[in-house]
Image (cartoon, rainbow, N blue to C red; front, side, top):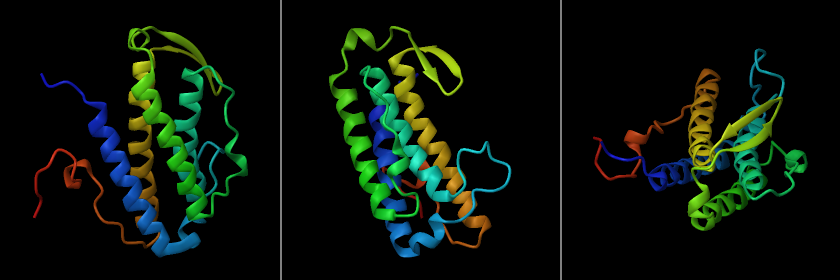
Length: 169
């Protein structure tokens, strides 16, 4: 069975971030200000808040793994495309550094973390996979939100990305 390669998912989310950054530059802050809907859990009011959450979660998981204080991203405006994607560059740079420098012998050693109102005992490896899957899941939600509000959003599925090659005509 092929093994999961985090680099492939990292490349895919980098590609997806680039595509969303370009798309949001074209559609401006109006798209970021779209309501996230009435049935959320109360943490995100607007599409931009969900995007900020993607990048903030990545940053905070890195900080948890390095036993650092957690970043409060509330000062980053959820309605400013460039501020959001500058934050994404910072969070991704730190995530990549974690993946490259985290002690190999600690990847599979469970740790206990307080996350929201939960105590999770998980390995750093599981957190790394979660960071990438979390991002992929939220981008799909954001694409659906935009489509339901009349915006045209191209396919962003892994199949249509340049990662691992191939061609779709």
